[in-house]
Length: 572
Image 1 (cartoon, rainbow, N blue to C red):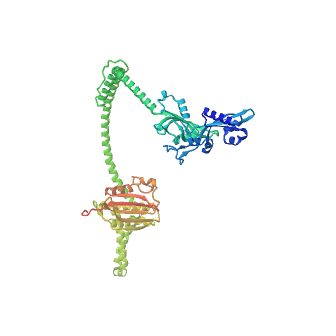
Image 2 (cartoon, rainbow, N blue to C red; image 1 turned 120 degrees about the horizontal axis):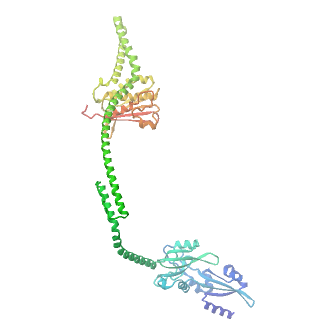
Image 3 (tube, rainbow, N blue to C red; image 1 turned 180 degrees about the horizontal axis):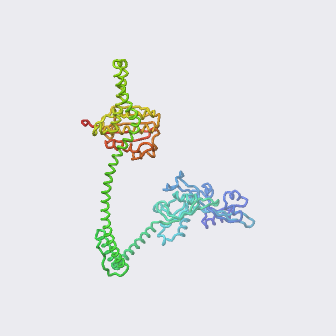
């Protein structure tokens, strides 16, 4: 036993192992369950894997191994946040081989602790990098990670202090440890940028327990790249300085004709149609282009002369057509005035048809017979004097209605120019004019005629507008409806005025036709009127400085609003 122990000790020292021991086959069962490499050796296969030993397991071999494995964590920028402050586990190169000799069967187990094993990591660094290539030891680096903690590295924090206990960035950890991928990219290592490679390290159970990193400083390559760019730029500049004068001399034969053509086109653009390139000594394609350009300019000048002649002729024709349009416009104005009167007659057509014939002749008969009755009765008429007076008053009322109809039909015979009009009595007079139409259609009228300022408009024209709106309202309702007339004072844009509202309970007008309501000859009543009433009414109101508008009411019916500015104090 003493000889065996001495042999193991000498072999461990010679091979640089941190522990070495023999397990008899009968005692290897529990250890085999813990370590797959031991299990493989029991099966007759030597195995070497990386395994992670707990601190207590290392201390079982040697307390110094547990101390060597202990690494204090250093807060590292861009690493995954953690509450841990120390890493006590050890990363071990774990080997086991079967022993069968002289009837003895067992397993030889050994291992090397990689935590703080600087000789191991420096050997890797020397194998991977050549100082002549990388520019020194500090530029080529290697690291062993246990999980994401550097447990053996030649990366320095400063001077000769190695970056043990620092951690890898979160991006690299996710790619290598979590996803099991090899990372080949630039990465921020401790305090500088490196061109890096990270390889996941798996234990005997196949789990990713750490990483092997190799990389070199990015700065020397960036400097080399910058130097190469500067050299290339200097070379390019030198070639450019030598070649530009030669190219300019060679291009002079091209640029001179082109410059001449450019000057010619500029003169043409300024209005000189006689500008030409003239004869050129060049017989190449540019000389041919110059000749073609002169030919095109000749053709352009000829076409310009023709266009000017056509423009003069067109201008003369436009003047002739303008004169014709002025004559036509004058005729149209005359026709418009005639249409105004035509619409006025159309508006009272229905009214006078039912009133003039039915009233004028009977009124004359009633008045004549009334006079005959008084003469025939003599003193006997005193008994029916009240009744006769009542008949006189009603006949006078009928005559007043007929007179208002005549005033409406021929306003120029009853009124003069524009005047300050009181709208309240005018509206009441209009109601008398259309009383026959409204009563025939069983239409009720509701009025709310407030005191309003006087407005400046010719009374007959305003009367025509009101009657037209009332007749339109009556025709829209057909029968059994309600018309609401309202007068109120209203100020618009700082101007005092009066607003007349005419509401009916008819069906209104479709929204698609509202924009056309005031167009001449537009009507929804194919068998009635000429379609000029609203257009003429709008013209009369606008001429007086007012405005007429239409809208469909939310509940039912429609509303026309006529607004006119008030007569200022001291006028009229």
